[in-house]
Length: 219
Image: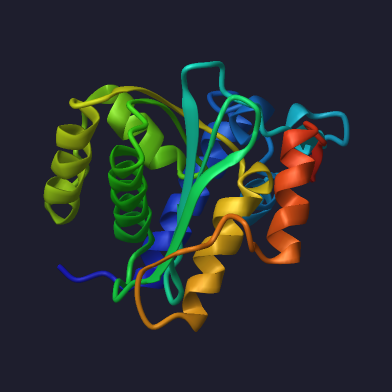
């Protein structure tokens, strides 16, 4: 039996609200997800952890690691930046992508970033992404659905050649990679930016990260 999409959505919303009302879900479930709670018709107390504002920091890697931040954007492309233990830029890239879903875009950006690490001889790499699904899938050894199997497999093959670990950062702290991914919209193909002649906006964000300046994240 076919069901209208709106009916399915309303059934899911009603079920989530019931689970909250019966204390099976709590305010902590919606930590930093105020708008999601509102979508399900859930009113959070002002003192709820889900309402809390916070700060996000980009942390320098420890020698001999470099840190790779990447980002993929539907409608724009992929971008990434490699920095050393002092926060100095090793390499950056940006490229348009002909991809129409965000998971494929994020995975493609990660693959390009890892390949760039190998090109520059960076074998100890701290990978940091704002795509929690990808971070958790890699940690769990999962490959998502069939659409992403080969992309996840390629990531795993490259990572097996390196000494790596991976972590999540909120988008507010991933601004350099996000800027590069958005810049790719103006490009015709893959480009590695000249690190001695970077855009002033990107330079400013790099300096903020280097100084461990906080980025505000609204609750």
